[in-house]
Image (cartoon, rainbow, N blue to C red; front, side, top):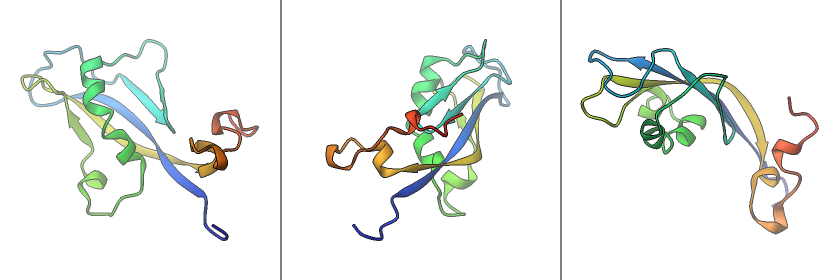
Length: 124
């Protein structure tokens, strides 16, 4: 539509393993982390995360990337528990810088597509 803002912003996230008040029974190493940049999970060399924990984290990460109301729990609550009820492992999700995306760079609609964002000239 004419005049419609076709850009949107997403937070980059850092997801870091922390150990809560109970010992970890799953493979959680305090301080291991990964980043979320757009739709991409970025792991530094040697950093790991349990696939079971990742399965619990993934549905929440897109919501953490978006602006939310100040008092929304998604804005205020930063730690996600390991899905094993006996495990003290947690994952601290921290919002970091923001990235601009455009609808045309991210849509699957054929009539609205442009060059995908990961192929833009201004990428790092």
